[in-house]
Amino acid sequence: MSANSLPRTERLRSLGVIRRMFESGESGFIFPFRYVWFAEPDAEQSVEVMFSVPKKFHKRANKRNLLRRRAKEAYRLQKQIVHNGAQVNLDLALIYSSKEVLPYKTVANAVRRILESVVEHL
Image 1 (cartoon, rainbow, N blue to C red):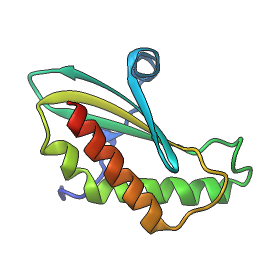
Image 2 (image 1 turned 180 degrees about the horizontal axis):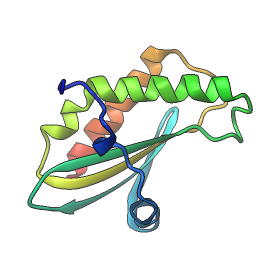
Image 3 (image 1 turned 90 degrees about the horizontal axis):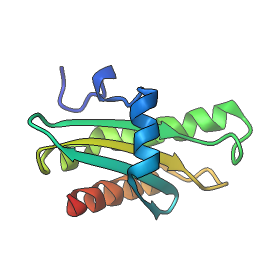
Image 4 (image 1 turned 90 degrees about the vertical axis):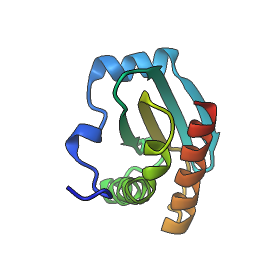
C-alpha cells in the first residue's frame, strides 16, 4: 500500500473512542478547522483521524462532500508529519468550522499547521 494512502485502519470510526476523545482530549482552532485530539503512549504507533463538516454551516451535501474531500486529501498528503512524530496512539478529529467554501490551498495549509501543532504538544 502506498505511503500516501488513507486506508480504513487509519480512519476513526469507533463510537467509544470518539466519545473518549471529545470528553478528555485536547482541542484547538486553526482557521477554518476546530480540532480535537487524544494521545496515549503505546507500544505501537497508530494514528486515526476523522473529518466532519457540520450540516449547520453547509446545508447542501455536495458542499459538505467537497470540503470533506479537500480535508482528507490535505491530510493524506501530509500525514507523514504525524507518523514521523512520537510513538503514541493518536486520535484526531478535524471539524470544518467556516461558513464559506475555501480553496484547497487554504485547507491544506491549515491541516499542515494543525498536524505540526499536535506533534509539538506530543
